[in-house]
Image 1 (spheres, rainbow, N blue to C red):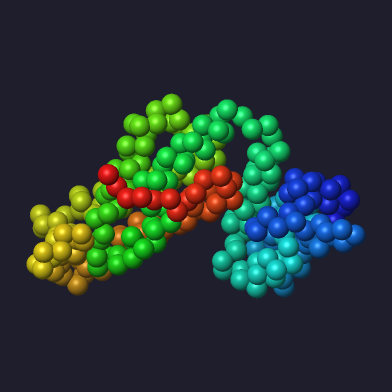
Image 2: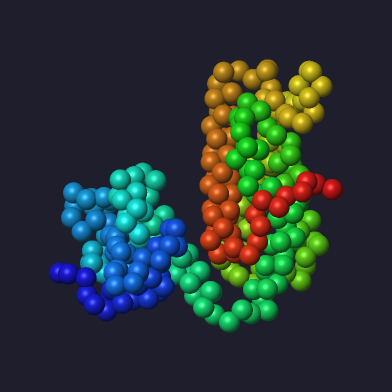
Length: 259
């Protein structure tokens, strides 16, 4: 069965006629360039087509509005675009559209003001660099990042939690994953010895993994660290992308350093 006209109207309407990834208009004068991409392909041989699906392949729930470029990218890189990610991108874009066309509320204004203040002291755009070096080397600035999140909650009590529940979930997910990594670094022990210590050359910016660990212990530590690292890397990137698309009023690279 073909995609119904009501499904087409709903998909284009809730997405405001824009690509769910880059937000570029997909309706031009006299031409509609938007493509109604299947999250799970219409045919089993297509992108993600062999994955289980609840409902019909041509239903609104299995479609996402994309520009031609992103439709090609999504279908040619299945590993980077699993169904759950496409559903998340679709939901976040439709949510963004809903927010844009709603009256600018006092609650959103307060969230924006809080984010402006937070981004001055939270190096969100630098998180990937701060995580670089794990598991062999741990950048102690990550302790300051967690402290910034804690102080933000104390300094902006009138904005905590965020009024926007999606924003709150993104922030809490990032903060929680950061706390779990830092807590593991400081609390884990082997034979009573800490996993990380300062180096012998007086470099106090980084902690280095203990040289007294056996190969088996090192492999176990590496696995634990990589699990924590992977979660934090994902949640920090999701938080960054969410702010990028939903809070464009906020300058994300305005970090001025810790006071």
